[in-house]
Amino acid sequence: MNITRHEMGDRFSELVTVDLGSARLLYLSGQVAEDASLDITGQTRQVLQRIDELLAAGGASRENLVSATIYLRTVGDYPAMNAIWDEWVPEGHAPARATVGAKLIDSEYRVEIQAVAAIAKPTA
Figure 1 (cartoon, rainbow, N blue to C red):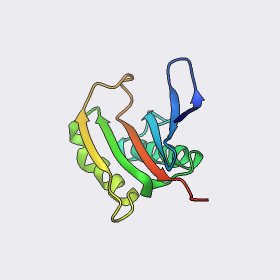
Figure 2 (cartoon, helix red, strand yellow; figure 1 turned 60 degrees about the horizontal axis):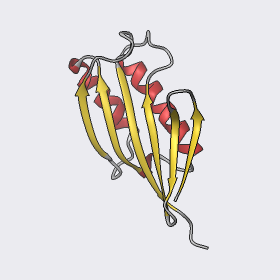
Figure 3 (cartoon, helix red, strand yellow; figure 1 turned 135 degrees about the horizontal axis):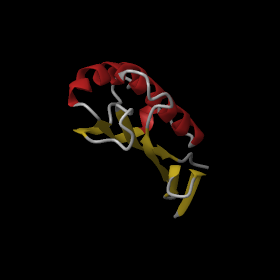
């Protein structure tokens, strides 16, 4: 087994890949919007765009998501967040998911999403 950390900071890595031989697991840290002044729709779009970037860096895509945990500052944002999520997730590829109300680290953040993906390694 081989573990690779990407975009590593002092406290966490944005992406960690675990090579299991025939497959790789990709663990994405919780992602928040770059522009915290946006409403829930804008923040959700930014977060999902960043998830796309991290998945691509690990050789994966949305279709490879197996799990997502979504943290919402306000549970009333659930319908608006879901509208963007539903546009983003490819039909037939919805991951296991939990959504919880949470006090996020910065009061401006409305949503944070953590995800896990799995990809098969090509056979030689």
